[in-house]
Length: 97
Image (cartoon, rainbow, N blue to C red; front, side, top):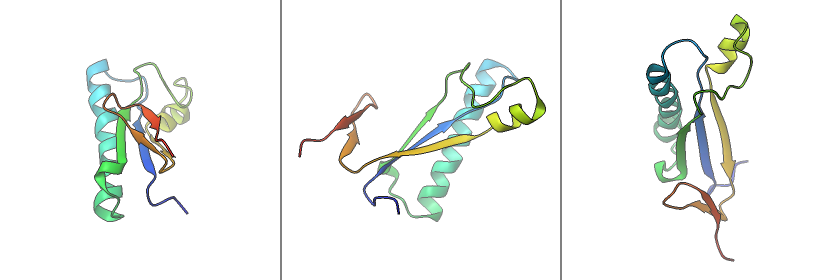
């Protein structure tokens, strides 16, 4: 079970097809759609969700095959324990005990 105070990290990815600007928008839209699902459907506090996009040349799989490109059209989900928070520069920092 996920710690109720955990911070969720959502990272949007795309394949290598399309322009850099359209892929940047697509990565953000993908991650934001998952954020909306967590918030609106699952009831997660939006303040506990951190949305970002992968770098333009960062991929989950190869772009040389249709299956690899499909795998790159994704959102990676991870989390940090409640004992951490995001600071203003959107880095994870440890909270004092």
